[in-house]
Length: 245
Image (cartoon, rainbow, N blue to C red):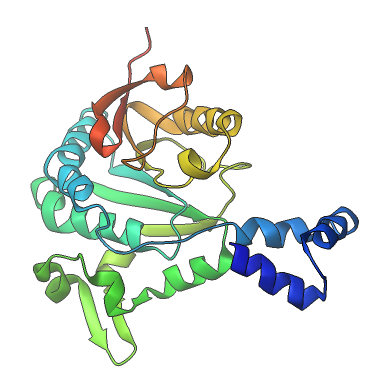
């Protein structure tokens, strides 16, 4: 972040951060750049293997049962701060290869949101370097990706259930309810506690009763609103929405 700010000072021909603060007062549009510069994106497929293993063996089958009991046509998921798409595509592949054969009557729809339009463009193209796939199970490489001179591309059959949208979680959320929300290593790491509570409140409004929230395994939820959730596996950052009352 410091390197990014220093580079920006040179671009604006400003001598130091004090001058930059003055510049921000007279150029409010610059806050958008600074906000984006403070976003640290580190992502790859199947990041935090234990979390996705847990999703594939227990959580997604359980959510499929929940959706079936509610006569739903699909399990609806929301990936918050999806970056360049590795997380939602991992989820889509996981569903189709491990869960969908057991629930042929159910689909999955994934809404993936991020504040960075450039990253979303990359996500829609779905091209990735080998370094982004270093944690991917070997069988997935054969089934889910095409190897090309430009790198690896997610095959279309695994892209069709993922919808990307430009959104700032602090100001807007996708419509509808979700059975699963992945909000990892963003809100509960970088936001101040009051804003964490506000965002979590919005997430809970969109999370179905009995639905699952996954946060980063090193993150903690703000109190007291976290009482609306019950720890499923706190060590992995997995929580379930309680029934009212």
